[in-house]
Image (cartoon, rainbow, N blue to C red; front, side):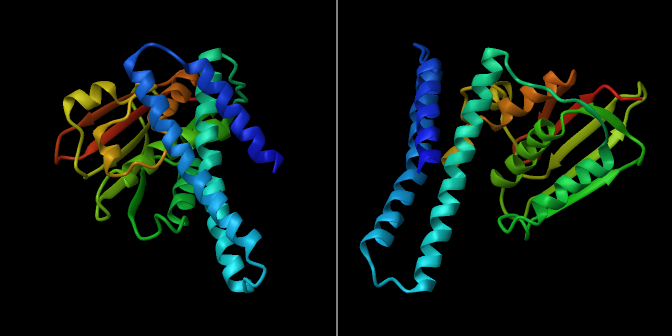
Length: 249
């Protein structure tokens, strides 16, 4: 399929651009190559089963098709992460700003995550102290940033972890978005490296899926919007990401 040839071609081009002598980048490239190979092998395997078995019943074929689609989705997300990182490095990110009502915007994003079967049983809450909080955002890009933070909290913590997303104004009129969990926390060393572009924390040993670029991408998007992000965490005491954005009003 031309789509997958294009994806693989983009992947190879961007890996070439990212080549470096630094150990961190070498580790990243190795990890990313492994993560990309995993869904591709699955797609190929199930596609071969479909191609070679002319007697496959419709239910089995449908099940194989769902597995292929799921893995194609995974591969596409990995490529999109790498592509976005490459665009940040090249300084070619298009930004389409519009005034957004943050409470409704973040609430809808949270509902979308809750409706994902992978997270539908998780404990996710939304809070706000003011319905009239606005900011100038690129809808698609900023949704990616907040989504990365929330899904990171869900993916790298036990199933019983509570995640709270909060939107409020500070005394200076800035919009504050907080993603807080009561999970296992992050040690000081990892906190200092969380937003590094090629860093993969030790928690990825337990949940290895993904590019490892999610938090770096989130920070880059937030900075692009004139905002900032910080993290407070304590081992076994949960983690809190705090995003500050200039208000649109």
